[in-house]
Image (tube, rainbow, N blue to C red):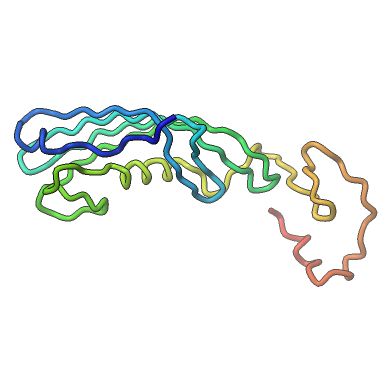
Length: 166
């Protein structure tokens, strides 16, 4: 699979009053807070840029798949999401996306990356009642029940951490 094409030739749009469509399929590499897209996950990009006087209206649709790691048990699940971006940006003012409208091509990667990251969870749980990992042996408590003897609470300098409700 090829990398997602995010570069659009904007000259065609500058010299006309029409719209410009760009579609691409491929992979994009993003890693954020236990989430990651990769070469094995396909991303579909559909973009329409519409010139309106001194503005360009961006209509971007992204369909993507990413792996998300459970914050408690560390199991990885594949998540499929869709996201949209609709915004008008001026030719003459600076934007948060560092787009140079005076160049021949513009790269939509900053916008697409932001769209995808906003859809990813900062902390992901595989299920509401996820039991997490055993603090003694590290095994996944959702799949395996440990039969460890109770430890003397005063043995460990970290014993107060066991009282936290996570």
